[in-house]
Length: 542
Image (cartoon, rainbow, N blue to C red; front, side, top):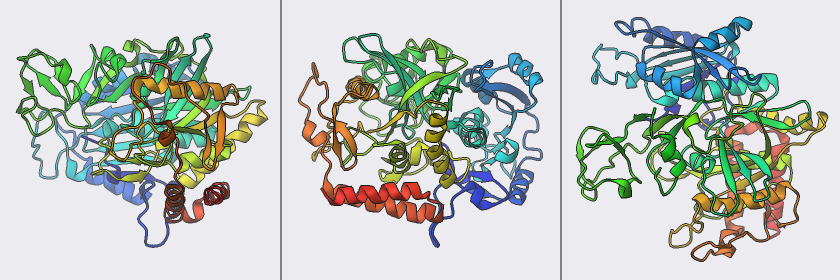
C-alpha cells in the first residue's frame, strides 16, 4: 500500500558511494547501503522458484519520448499482470522501444516478482505478495534494479522511482544532468508570454494539484508537462531543458475531486487503473473528498471489501495512499510540448512542503548556491505516501530523501556545479524559490486558500523571472512587496502569511545545523555550510 523505504537499498562497492556517513551513534536517514555480497545473497534467498506457475512478462519501455536524446530505455521482467498494465500507462512500451535498442544496447535491467512467502502459502491469491521478505535493490554501476515481494507501484513499477530517480540520478551525475522528483508546468500570462516551472514537493504535498491547476486569475493559463518526475539538462546555449520521463499519472486518489482538481478528475474518466479505492454499486469509484459527488442511494464498498456508509462508517472508504494510474495524454490541459524531444525551457525551480508555522507563503533564494541550500534544508509534515506514522516535521531535502541513488553530499556538489555549467555554455541557471501553501494561524486554520489561488504566487514568480523590482529583502530571502489579491473571497492576513518570526527561525537554523551534523557530518559541501552560517548571522540581527 506504500513505498517501503526501510527495505530499499543501494548497492555499491564502498558504503560512502551510496550514502553519507552519519555522526557516530546516529542512524542515517539518507538511504540504505547493501554490500555486493549481501545483494547477491538477498536475491538467492528469495528468487529461486518464486515465480513458479505464473506467466513471465517481458516489458521493454522508454523513460521519456522514444526519439528524445534525453530518454533512456529499460526492460522489466515481472510476474505481475498489474505491473504490465500499469507500465503500459506509465511508460512508452513495446516494439518501438526494442527498435531503439538495436541502435544502442545500453538499457536498465529490471527484475520484479510479487514473491512467494517462505512457507509457500499465499494469503490472498488475487494479490500475492511476501511482505515479510520484501526488498528493493539498486546497483547503479551496472544499471540494475531487483524488486521482490511487493506489488505497490513505487516498489513494482520499476521505471518510476527506482529507475527515473534512484538509477536516473546516478546516470545524471555521470552525464552532467539532473533527475528530480519534480512536476513541470507551463504558465501563460494574459499577454501570451509563456514560461515553464519545475517544482519539488514531497509526496502528497500538492504536486499533481499544482501541475493541473485551474487558475483563478483572469487571463492566466496553466498546462501540465508532468506531475512527478523531471529530467533536466542544459542545452548547447546554457538553457535548462526538462522532459517528463513518464507517460502517465500515478496520483494519490483521496482529496482529488471536482472541487480540488477538476483536470485530474477529467483525466481519470477512462483507461485508468485504480488501486485500493472504494467501489460503488453503480460501477464507479469513491474516495475521501468525493462525498459531494456520491449519487444518493448508491452503495459503497470500501477498499477492504466491506460495506461502507457515508457519515456512519468510522474507517476511511479508500486507503489514504490509494492511487489512480492514468495516461497523461488524457489530461485536458496537457501541454502541447509535453512530448517535445528537446524538452521545455525551465525558467524557475520551486521547493516546498507542508510547514504549518513560521515559513512564509513564498520567498526567492538570493543566489544559485543559496537556492541549493534551501533545497537541502527542505522540511515537511509527514504524509500517507510513505510508511512513517503521524504528523511530525521531517527533513526531506529536494523532496528526494527516499530517492537518492548516491551519496547526498555528492548530490549537493553536483547541483552546485550546475551554475558554472550553465555559465560556460553562455546561459544562466534558473531562479530558485520556496513556497508553502500550508501555513496555519493560531486556531489551526490555513492562512492561504491554495489550489487555483496559487496562480497569484506564480504571477509574482513570473515577475521575478523577468527581474521586476517587486520584492523586499529579508534574512531568509526575497519576499513579495505585495501579491495580487484582486477578486479573492475572504480576507487574507498578508502580514501573518509573510511574517518571519525570529525565534522560529533561530530554532530552524539550529535544526538544520543538527540535521547536517548528524546526517552529513564530513560529507557536507563547504558552500552549503557557508550558506547556513550566513543565514544564522542574518536571523540573529533581526
